Amino acid sequence: MTTRLEIRGFEILKGCLDVPAQHTLIDALRPVLKAAPLFSPDTPYGKPMSVRMTSAGAVGWHSDRTGYRYAPQHPQGTDWPAIPQAVLDIWNDVTGLERQPDCCLVNYYGDGARMGLHQDRDEANFSWPVVSVSLGDDALFRIGNPTRGGSTESVWLNSGDVVVMGGPARLTYHGVDRIRFRSSRLLPKGGRVNLTLRVAT
Ligand code: SIN
Ligand code: MN
Picture 1 (tube, rainbow, N blue to C red):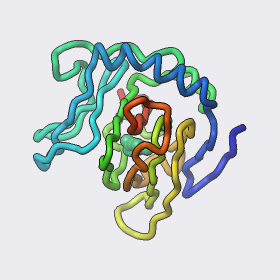
Picture 2 (cartoon, helix red, strand yellow):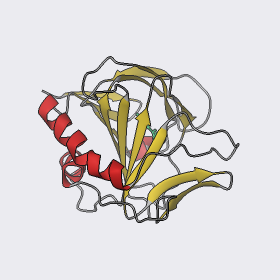
Picture 3 (tube, rainbow, N blue to C red):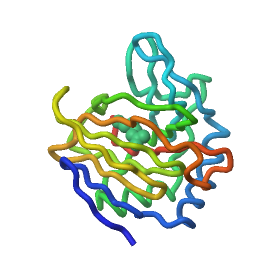
Picture 4 (cartoon, protein in one colour):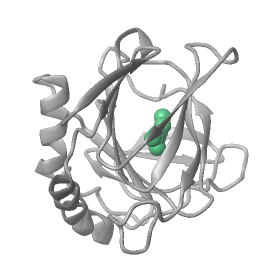
């Protein structure tokens, strides 16, 4: 059963995906990870991110010393694999939009990985929402404000939770302070997978 929370304009659908649906997603992601292996992008400041990532879709998110951008290919020089239908189904269920996402960023948080407070602002049009799917270990998700600074609120995201970041909250700062490594048994080697679906172009 889904419990709907709203925090600072973010819609948090706790328990949106049951355990069988979570396993279906992990199975659907295996060929994606095989075709487009996880990599650790450098931040524009030259430090590698602690989160490893890859993408599916027409474009994938990439970062290096020249900045953040959406790229048509994986750094290994191949097109990104298609977004699995099981992932698109979540977008369709929670947004009801006809427009389909063209990027599914796959973030993997191992033990100690985190993501600093940031805005999602590399997309062409901020009127489309960003949909985030949590799988595996629990994550402490922090939500700030549409501009840098000010107070923040935190919420634990568990496996199967879905967050919709849209409307006036589309540019709200957010990040992941830490994960509780091995708190979930979904992934045999532990860790957390976060999918973010976006209309990027
Ligand atoms: C992100 O903001 O790109 C990821 C959020 C999350 O991992 O929950
Ligand atoms: Mn983000």
